[in-house]
Amino acid sequence: MTHLALTRFLDERGIRVSSEERQFILQKMHSPTGEGHLYADAIFEGGGMRGLAFVGALRCCADLGLQWKKLAGTSAGAITAALLAANLPITELEEILGNFDYMKFLSRKTSPLIFNGDPRNDLRSPFRMLFCLVVARQLGQYSAEPFRNWLQQILAQQRIHSFQDIQKIKSDRQLKVVVSDISRGEMLVLPDALDPNAPALSDRHKQFRQQILSKSALQYPEQMSVAEAVRLSMSIPLFFEPGRLGDSWIVDGGILSNFPLWIYDVQPRPGQSVAPAPRWPTFGFRLVDSTIGQVSEIQGPLDVFASTIRTMMNARDRYHLREIDQGRVINLDITEASVTPTQFNLTADEKVNLYCLGYHWTKKFFLEEWSWTEHLKKRGFSPTGECL
Image (cartoon, rainbow, N blue to C red):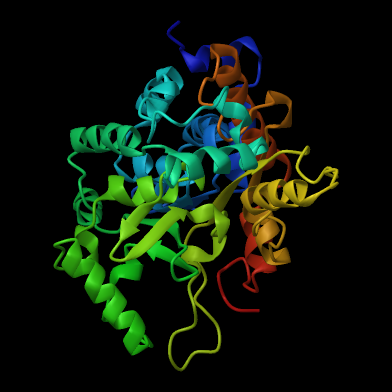
């Protein structure tokens, strides 16, 4: 495989942030800390292989001097969030994610009876997937172990094994990963969802959480493996085998919340009517594909089933953003890349296109849409952070 130096293509295509553009954008940003750091929190949407656009987006943010505090994501977004939480610099992210052969994730089918063609088309033919799985008596076409082992190795190089290790890097660094519990029909935010002592829990939920900790040989939630949590979050139904938490089957968090922008929003303290103003923004990185929403032809029950699966994997909560959230969402339009979530056999050109699109749309957002002052106003605060 040809080695990709991704940043070279930014210069070749003339889309790199210029010094004048950088100065203009920084004038619209929040104030840096006393040490001169420009912090932000980040939430990443799921999107399978299209998530490579996040790397381009993060390069643009790095060119502006942004550094990350709290991170969260679903599916492919959880992968990005975990690598950032492990303090991997952008150059290493570009090297790792830009040059990896993603077909290695599909190196272990769950059964020799699984017959499929190009993986990019699998979600377009869910009935064929289901038929193969029924015949093979499996719950997913591919084992997720190759992926988990890959991520575990990368994180180990940063001395990250569990969620508690992330806070050893920086005490105020956080990572949250969204998964779907299809046994109980619930969304879980890891590692928080493993805490049996969380307030306002029913006895049933306390027992469930305690059971998970006991079966996983964990004393407290933060001891959970980051690689395992992300592996659970990216387990696309039928495509990858589901994972387990206690007695529950766990799949891709995107079927319940693919874009958890709300996850770090601060609620009012007891006795207060409003929440305190944020010190820095939370940016949501969202993948946009204009082909989603095109009318599907429904002629029979198989079409109903196939369209239901596609809707579940594509619609979710992406179109239900509050008006006050619009100004902090960075929409990465990857339509022209023509890449599907399960297109693990990406070509070099497709990787470059996703990367450059991510950079382009992030730069456009900061130049044309972002304003810290306007963002505070939309959320009910004055530019000084006081409640309006």
